[in-house]
Length: 206
Image (cartoon, rainbow, N blue to C red; front, side, top):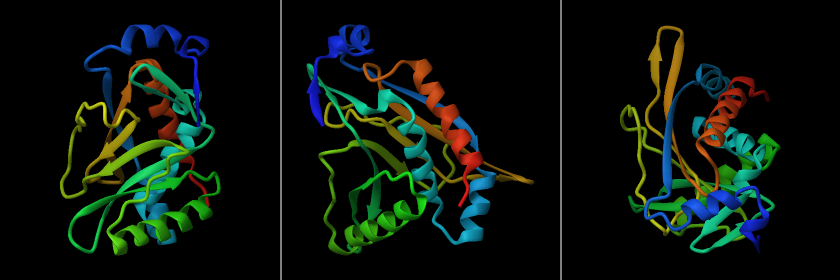
């Protein structure tokens, strides 16, 4: 991670326009067809949340915007991504866990299982300061149409959120909300990410 001059990036104009905005976060929601990935999860006995997190990391890794993070009046550039997941710990509370994105799904799965178990047992969060964090939050207690996260300067990273998936005959759908900082990307970039995410979900292979 390094600080860079925002005027020398593709986000120079956006930095000037939105960096001082009191509410620079934007949320888009898309309903995804997750039929294939649910089948993979059940057939291979893999956690669906893990598979979704890997697909999110894969799609994000294909876009340069995800490696840039605006903070106050500065811009930072990262050379790797990590996926943050919320873990229910043994005390009945929650903690955060940052898991490095790895293009190797098998390795990502191993890291996901070991780190989330460590956090659940220790009740201590694991943070990665060297990676660009893509936040996730799965609230599967009920079906949700849309999730709008809190707008705060404490966490300006992109955030992907969802609830319980829906079964309709031979199709399984899941509305997913994507929150992003307008300096980091435009609405069109965010829409492209959602399209890439659907492709990764459709094309997931082991």
